[in-house]
Length: 358
Image (tube, rainbow, N blue to C red; front, side):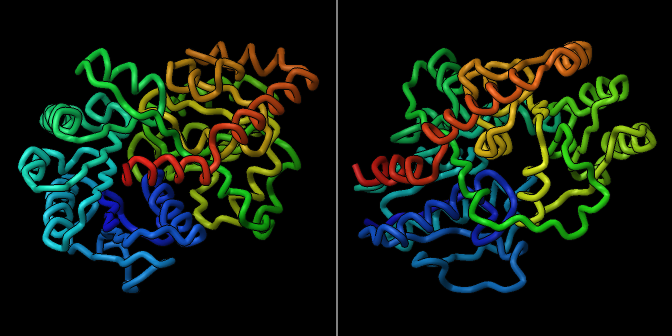
């Protein structure tokens, strides 16, 4: 089977949900010695060093950014290159370049599997023409792909209701976060235990709501994110950095340090209200930590309704004040059981390769 993974920044070692998925698919085919000739498309803009191969997969570089407006030509160029090189099984992650899929369907023997990601066109950052385009690209992806993958039951339900199309439900794995030894270097100023927030600093992740709640509490909160990336983040950093129980932490990308930060948490705050199965959530569930999440359908599906949920700042404050040690421990144990049962990379990778092969 000659297959290609497209739509990501690339592998190895880049930061993001699709990149983590692609890397773990590559590792799985290498470790299991699958009879797969696999290629992964990468953005040359993201890699100073550009090896030809990673864990048995060939790497193809496209001289465009994989994100933003350039993601459209990036995906399109990648798709046509894969076809020209005889790849008959295509795994497209995201819908940016999906507008050419009806044309590709004319290629004999081709199978296209598309992970449609979250409902991207509804995100705050894709307002206007970008949102209109992504909505159209989603429609094309659903209609023109041989198989559509949803990473969350709420996404699967949306696709069924909006397009009358069935999907394969395959979430993300999170157990890779346990592969690295914790690195405590530079964390001396953090408390021994705390509530933890960890995400991109974007309005739809409800960071302002979480910070507002903790500003009225004595409970320590460590919040890690890319605060300086946007005006929204900079304003929040300025407003809350002086609170005695709130630590505004710059982003951390090194795996050992991330594990050390997560190890100390006794409560995880998850404010995401868009997308599907969020990688940060399933990763944190593998630490057996109690979760207090935004009450959207995506998060309830991911945690099987067994976490704590909020819709406004006062919900967070009340939940934290009422959370007893016994309840915290029980919720953490339930999160770990769900993670081990549903969100391991061996299970996820096996499902993807079965789709591509059949």
